[in-house]
Length: 360
Image (cartoon, rainbow, N blue to C red):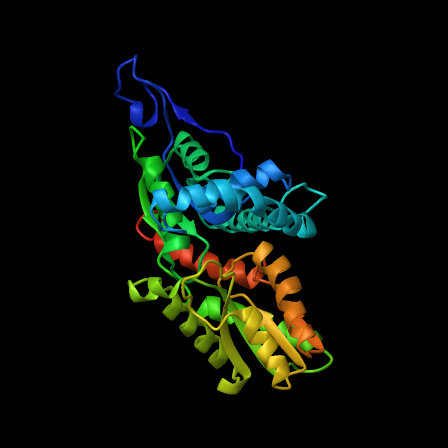
């Protein structure tokens, strides 16, 4: 992801006919930036508080008026929540690299994508990653890409299902950066890719691989997605529908019956009604219905993070076991699996059409 930049000076390349006082210009490239949600820089109180303040102040995430929300957020929520969130992050923290697993995995995904894209397009493409909240920031990465000569950029939020609190806010942040550039690169944002066969097949492969390792077959597969208020669905956000279709396509790819696969939604907070059923309650219901062994995966997350490594594998697992469950099998996110990288590469190549020559 680091590479020397070739600068054309007056009399060279595109500046062959420029006057001697013309500033140098980097050789033109196409950039690919993958974006994920974000991560605190550390697990201490103030690092967690800074991260949560940025995240929960985003109007795409919590769209209440500032006069109502900010006093509650700054004076109450951010006084207490950094302690519980810090504990959750500490339980999953990558201590070897002193960073969150989300950062580790997103970097690994980017390294593999860089290798594939460089093989296809050589030095014509530059690849990097950013986070919507925390570091590396969207602003810093897009500015760095521009400095490297990226006059066209594919901006790729790593969310298979479109959601305004995820895909849209990532794009918003990219556009905010462009607003302050003298020379804006052309930019393409990714459409949702939840229904692309290569993505569905990678999901199916991850389920098949896990089931092959288990001594007994789960009687229920639960696809758990991050929740949103039901109001978002009523206001036109397609996220809920994308999630439901993802589950259906996955079930069909696996050849499972409707009775074998459920959809649920996690990470609910606040008092308004959210789309459901809530995963933490649904798994308890399954246990009470006699399901002793369930498997669960998170198709909305492209990389394992606190919502999967802590919330699912601790809180949701505990709910299932406390209600009488016996075996809880978590299927990891697609992370940097090769078939996942193939799927992401397929989506990227589609958006590069017309900007770079077709790979042979």
